[in-house]
Image (cartoon, one colour):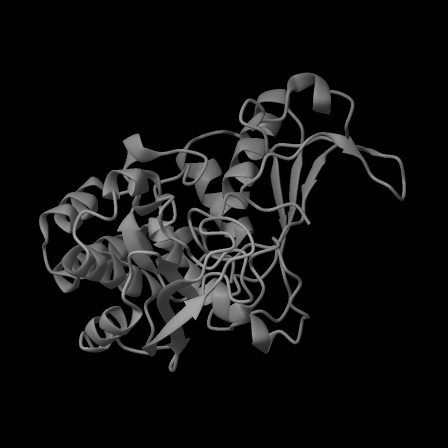
Length: 316
């Protein structure tokens, strides 16, 4: 399959011959008027992973705006948030840092379904879209994906398991640094990180000494077959979630960022992560060496305010 960070071209479905219009091109993120002028409705049926910078959510919100502009109904066939609808984790996105990797001011882990997120955005932004959410049956907010008995189907080539989806909101925070690997091109993307400048033993020891709830960290070595450090063996660490209810993935991400800054100063450029971290205060504090637990505490305060804001839009 196509990597989830690559551009995707237009084409035709091999089985039916139906035209396929890509919304994953730098100059084509929106539905053009002529592309939907003859359709009765637009239907959205894609699995989320529950993270703000998972770009499928922006594709959905852009398409919702486009159908509002053209007066077309928009149907969402809602699906579970695989990492539950109860866990909410900051930082909150600053408005001026909106991009295709975060186009709405929500926390990194928002705890909403796509149907709920679309309902909130349509109401708060006054888009006036003719939105119809086909809700799920029997899903409850506290359910993890493995409670649904549904088969995990990779929503993109590198999102291969529920465990990867759980770690993703924290591990991917630093991904825009090209001298750093999040495990793409290995058997465990988003479950390990590494670089040619990392001492895996030292990093694992440092992170474990922080007593981050619900996770243990182990030194490792791996050789990506693609992406950063392709064909090169590098050191790093692997993350093992021991208690997913207690685990806060963005706390791990902030702790990891602070640890890398402390142990290997100057190797990471936090400004490259602006649009993933998405919060000026958090970025400035990481850069200046503020303790990660303090940054996380403030991020969680913002997340709890968001929990109140989202409440009236919840469908489950």
